[in-house]
Image (cartoon, rainbow, N blue to C red; front, top):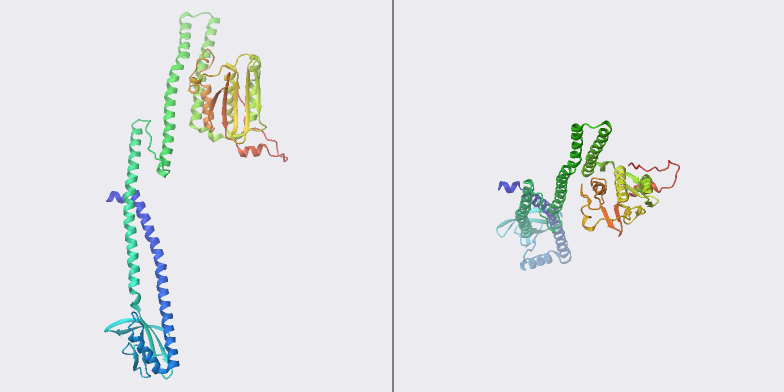
Length: 477
């Protein structure tokens, strides 16, 4: 019993039952007041109307006529009939169903509550007294207990409603508690499995869109992200152990050979330069991994600003144009007048630079590379790099964004397999994704970013004499 009372479902059901009882009381109180007022007012009006009607009979037919009229009414024995009494000046009864005048004050037209003896029992009644011409006294009264059965029915109905509401509240609390305990039990089992290391466990969900399902879906999304991050850390650790072994082994071999052979100065400096290159390669891998870790953590999102992606693309194309001309590749740019987005300018510049750099690596001499940044109001801002190179086989498309992955086409080219991983991470940080589309021949890498309406309004505003707009980002290699 104590556990049930401590249950949130039981407390919630009790609270709703209490609110229901309060609402019932608030509803019954004015209803009862209206009932009492209506009955009292109706009783007064009826008594005054009867007194007036009997007074008219007296004026029309005299005392004898009123006596005859009252005696006829009394002989009918109508259920709930009024109490009537007509007396002379000395309060001697002349007609009616009362034996004696019950009131101390005569002739008061106001309503009084009196006690009268009726059939051997003392009853409470509401009465109106009228003094007629000739000092006749008329009393018209009505038993106050006439509506007592209706009042009892009202209280019985109210008590029944309270009992039914309380029973339904208790039963509802038990049913809700059982349903919640079943859901919580399932959630608890899943969470226990997760705590024990089973990262594939997920909270059970149903098709209903209640709060527990919404919470379970949110937690499942968090668990998906955690599993992805843990697998990513595991993959990165394995990749680091694999990819750093080669440059470190080469570095150790060079240094060991120098230590054993002790060649001349020229060959020694050449080996030192090669060792420095190996160290730079290792440092580059660590820097790339640190950038990816920073992006995955979401910390860079706090530095988002409004920027013009078209201007950033222009700076990137200008930076890579000499390298494209040296290789005999045509590098062109297609942009809208403005392409406002909200993001990290440095990361977007790095992502676009990696895409252009990859295109330059794999596009043969005489090929074409097209960089496009286009504002499409219904779709967003498209940032794409298309080349006429060999492209990526369909089987390798899902793998090329994995860290340290290098396909068959990339064998023999410089790099460690982190370029597209960085681009995909930047796209994900900005609420998008990297799409790799086959152009036959060639590859088109596309990122669609949500537009920045405030930035669009600021970039396209008319000149009002203020300083001209300057783009926030600046491209850096």
